[in-house]
Image 1 (cartoon, one colour):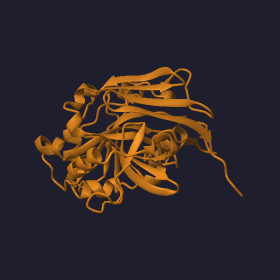
Image 2: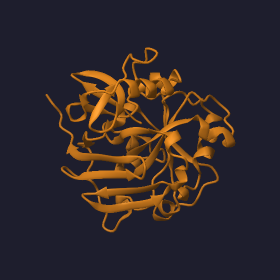
Image 3: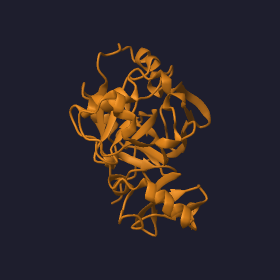
Image 4: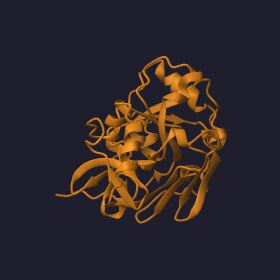
Amino acid sequence: MKFISFNLQGSPRFGVTDENTITDLTDKVLGARTLKDLISKNAIPQAKKYALENPGKINYNETELLPVIPNPGKIICVGLNYHKHVVETNRTIEENPVIFHRFPDSQTAHLQHIQRPLVSTHLDFEGELAVIMGDAGTHIKEEDALKHIVGYSCYNDGTIRDWQQHTRQFGMGKNFQKTGGFGPHMVLAENVPDYKALSLQTRLNGKIMQSANLSQLIFDIPLLISYVSKALPWRAGDVLVTGTPGGVGAKRNPPVFMKQGDKVEIEISDIGILSNEINDEIIHD
């Protein structure tokens, strides 16, 4: 099943979809009001049962999608996690993962716009696999880590490259509003028997810019989950964004940055396609 968050007539909801119709699960399963709430109640099995018994009739195309988890407590991102990306940035592989953070306000949804800010023209794409966590807690062993994953989705870690380089701490370049695409839906981990078999592709206006297999991660997902858990507890709906392959726009010759009207797609096999168009920021009086 594919789980989504969406707006219907101005009301935030969540449910499951076949990309034609939606079954609204809001308040239907153990009183869960959001997908994050459903995960915290360990109620995915009950939600699946409800959806099978009560197929929905909401038209998918008449809703406004939200980021898969609109309100995660944490978005933990990983940098320099593919060899080709390390090479193109003239960096070396670190002994430990490079970790940075996103805030929920920086996200946008499938089919919603990614926003190019007024202060920069250096908006870059980064196609990545997103991992949605259960309430796993701290000090997770690597051999136990995968069982704490609820699902997977696509992520575009849209980056304002010149702001990323303002200081050695590049968090500002990663946290402009409406730059982090997250969607189109969450595929349950039980339907992805081997994440290393997944392939990832980023396309800009139909041209392939990034292509990789998840087996190429330098620090694999169990290690990342375990590493972070030694500092912070993984809570229901937290998101781990696992790193981007080589081919980012800033390291091309000449550089390629996204502009008004461009269409960027992140496709991960067996997960789906995250699609966004680029809009320039407008300040309203």
